[in-house]
Amino acid sequence: MSKKKKQFKETTIEDYYDLKIDKVDELVAALKDGGDQPETEVNYEMNANMGVDDPKNVTRRGKQRKFNPYSRDKLSAIPTWIKAIFVKWWFAGVVCYFIMWGLSIRDPLDLVVIVGVVLGLIVDIMVNPAFNYMQSDEREYDPYIMFPFPFKAFWTLFANILYYLLVIYIVSQLYFGLNTMINVANGTEQLIHVGVEPLLFGTFTVIVDMAFIGIKDGIVALVRRQKNKKKEGAVNV
Image (cartoon, rainbow, N blue to C red; front, side, top):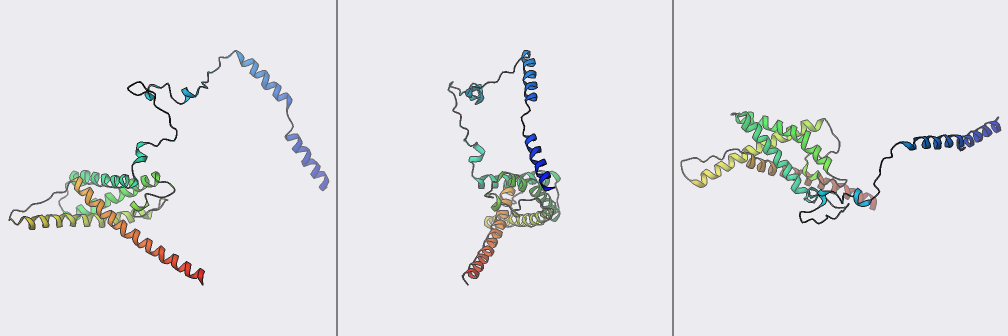
């Protein structure tokens, strides 16, 4: 029984890889019949495929731009910290413009709560996913994210909301302290009030945000260092 099974397997494999000559003849005949149809022209010239003849690749002086397949775009040449800080600053300014100016909320506590919730939602839904999309295997955008997780977790939404509630509260205290310092330095009875506007609000928000992220990164580094020391001590023992 075993010999029969083995012979059957060998014959089926041979039949499977056997060249079907009749099928090849049918394919050649089909190609000959379709020879009257117009053939599509294929350009095998390297210059045409590289866009050398494209007017967009010609400078104003008529010179041909050199094609470099390894060239980097202008956006990738910008340092990571500039892009990360600008994105965080811009979104904070947008929230100030549309929420604080648009809604015209008078109660300070309600304003802090609403702005903190909106900013936390935007960071979790838009900013952090954009950072995760742009960064490489080196995770260069992690130092600019409070919760740098490569996957989308549901709990990060609530964590970012609570975190930015704290950030916006401290930003409001910075405005209060700035106005107090200006009035004390002025020394007059006329009070000077620095209003909330997107540029300064975005700057304060980024400063507070990066301060908290820096503290978090410092704590994580200390914990990792202690763990590495314990591992090294265990290995030496």
